[in-house]
Structures are given as structure tokens and as C-alpha cells.
Length: 187
Figure 1 (spheres, rainbow, N blue to C red):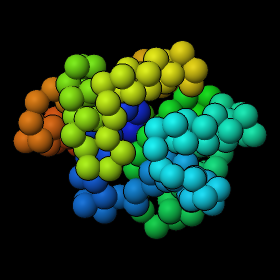
Figure 2 (cartoon, helix red, strand yellow):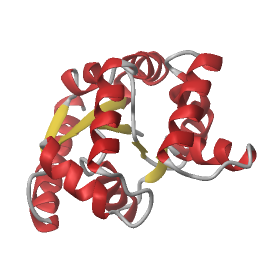
Figure 3 (cartoon, one colour):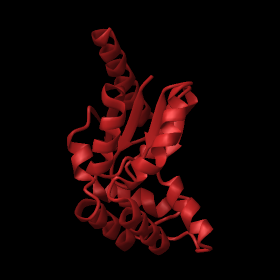
Figure 4 (cartoon, rainbow, N blue to C red):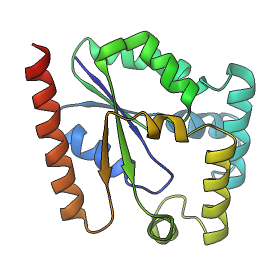
């Protein structure tokens, strides 16, 4: 069983890819669900300000590998039954933690979209839309504060999401072929 950890900047298409994989039988674990759970537990409104506050608090309490640490029991349990797609690997420290726990079963899938396109999509999303200023601030925070660049740079495979959903699906089909070749080479 494999863990496919999807990494990319906010709005790049991670959730769409994870949804495609879930439809094909992967057990999906969205790292960001923990943020939303903690916001609700605290009785706060779900918005960018409160999301950032909770993310920073979780990292203060658990370190920069917080989301991997908090999601690892769910991943381990799910791996007993199926492959897992982890939607939203955030930091280098999370990557290191998951790599230590899952070794060669971990595959990092990066998704890239240009900032102008991501910011446009983020403004149109039905849940948690971001203004252009919020999107730029989020990008800056992800690069400077949570070490997101490392997992993108070390990714086993990169998908470019620069167009339509059909084009994203074609990129995903290419990834599946690559993944099958890896399985053949390994065994």
C-alpha cells in the first residue's frame, strides 16, 4: 500500500487531484481538516484569519511537522485497507516525518499552477474564497513560514495545472502511468 502525499501552493489543484484519486479507491485524508476541526472546537468563524491563527497554534504546540503527526494515525489505519492520498502536505518537516514513518511507501506528488491563475481560482472557490491580497499573503506565509518549498522541490512527480479540468485529468493519467511503471520496476 502507498501513501500519495500531494503538495502544492494554495489553489494549485491538490483537492481536485485528491478527489480523482478517491474516486479510484484511494482513502483520502485532507490535512487541512484538522484546522477546521480546531476552529469549530474553539467556537471561531471559519475564515483566513482564524485558519492562520489555528495553523500557527498547532505548529507552536506540535512543531513544524504538526499536520503529519496529527494525521499519521489516520494514515496508518487507512493503509491497512487501501492506498492513501494525503491532500495537503505542507512543510519540509512533515515530509521528513512521513518519510521516516512510511519510507518507500511515501510518494510525493507536487502540483504547480502559476500564482496569477491560482489567485483567480481562489477568488472563485465556493468555500473559503480568498481576495487577491489574502492569496498573496497566504503564498508569502507558505514560503517563508512553513517551509513548503522543500516538499515541492523533492517531489517524486510534478503535475502542471495550467488549464482546464480535462487537462488536469490528462496530467493525472500521466502520473498513474508513471506510478504503474514504478511498481513494475520495484517488483
